[in-house]
Image 1 (spheres, helix red, strand yellow):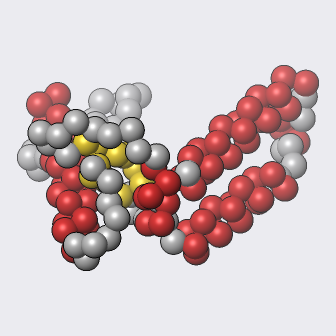
Image 2: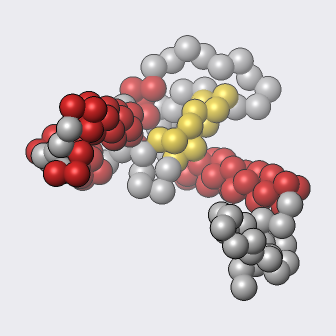
Length: 141
């Protein structure tokens, strides 16, 4: 039997429906709020660990687990500047960029599966490929 991810209360599964992860909306909201708060605290800890002369714009970066930048938030109480995100690109390691570029190359090298080898299937497959590549390219930027 599954348990709520927030309060560990036992959940009852209704056959034919998606498995529940939370017992109610309040638990779901609390869980995701705590996740976001932890990400912001981790980013603040990373920025605090940087040397004082390190060039950091007036923003707090929420770093993704893979080392990429997930979200940029203005520091509380200060007006956000319109600085380019390029200062944060240094945070993405070269190996992470190379791995993403290899994934993009692998996606481009894929061929249409036989079950989707129809006029509409090829079009939808091409759109899926394009979306996957765009998502990976966003991680590099």
